[in-house]
Image 1 (cartoon, rainbow, N blue to C red):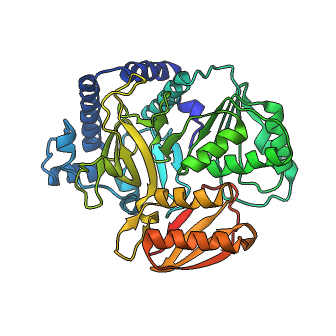
Image 2: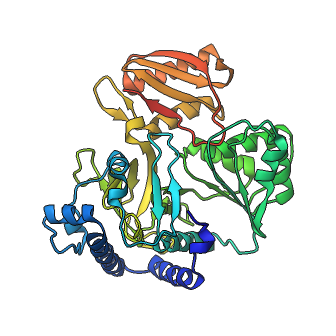
Amino acid sequence: MVALSMLANPIEILSAYRSANYNFKASPQQLEQNTNKALSQISVFANTNSKYYRSLFNTCGLSQGVIKNSTELAKLPVLSRKEVVELGEQLMCTSVSDDLAWKQTSGTSGTPLRIPWSKEQLNAVIAVRLRFSSQMGLMPWHSIVWVHYKGKPRDTGSSEEFYEAYGKKFSPSIMWTNPSKLPGFGKRVSSLAEFKPHLLASWPSDLLRVGQIFEEQRRPISVKLVRPMGEALTKQRRTQLANLWHGEIFEAYGTSEFGLMANECVDHHGLHLNSDFFIFEVLYKDGATSTTGEGELVVTNLYNRALPLFRYNTRDLVVLSTQERCSCGTYLPLVTAFRGRFQDGLLSRQGRRVSAGRVMEAIESLLGNMEYQLTQVSSNEFTLAVPNGRIDEGLLEEIGSLLNDLVGDNNLRVIELIEQVGQKQRRVISNV
């Protein structure tokens, strides 16, 4: 693995950024034309450099290895994370340089997956980040804090080590952090107060936890731009974060497999999918194309020549807007809601899934800013983990009644919440 700076080429990044800016205002016809061209190129590359894809394309009636449009793309089967893990290096293209940036999923919802990024993929990711930053009015001289996770959560026993990991500046405007080290929250708050970031990006659970410390200590803090990412963001949490940090919220959506895939609209109507760098499909669970705009998000990467992924199912439930053009001026598709992973939805007595997002909205309307984790142990048994394992009896009764409305009869038990510092939080889990 090499550092991102060794892969990044300023000229190539500038070219990708210019294309990204042009595409933001491009017509649907122009976007489709550009996307089809990129799809043809990545499919030919995969056919030439991967035995697996050459065999798959031939089996699907694409013997020439050229996928010209979304209709031909739909001939390929949907690819699951499990299949990517099992296939491993068989999916990789052989002619790509060893100079790759490797990404790894958090593993919070399954086996961790390592994904190599080619320089073309890296350029695309940087380009959409720059497009997003410019739309928010972010300038190179603005201070930024990106909280990102490295390695396994552990107790280092040293708050100083935590502070060094949190406070080290890799450039004049960026401070990288590692919340995986448990000690040193006091130092962390102090360094944030001293750094005074213009933008703060982290998981909603992490932003909530640290913001509450500022509030408890009655320390004034104001961050102009707050960027929750990596976890489902409910309306309740969004309001809490805006109040804690006194800043404008801009949600982002991405994965380690693909990088940044969607950014919140500057008019705050939802998140625009970066459909000029990826092809997105919204499918029902049976694989059919959704006619309502609600379903699982399936993604095709157009620029990762190290590991092309065609029709990869993220398992994230989304709701697409029917609006063709947004008031912010773009035709890029608009997602009005992310409702979590399908498998995290609670299974009702009628055998249907109630989305994790819907459950979170309901639970948080009762719990406020209390941290929690709701787990469906069996069809009618649930555990609710909260700090210290204690909760008001009246509130517990309300939550039980809420679950009864959502899924039917239930047996709810309260347990102690074990804090997972440095990891994405799964607020709702179903084991059935």
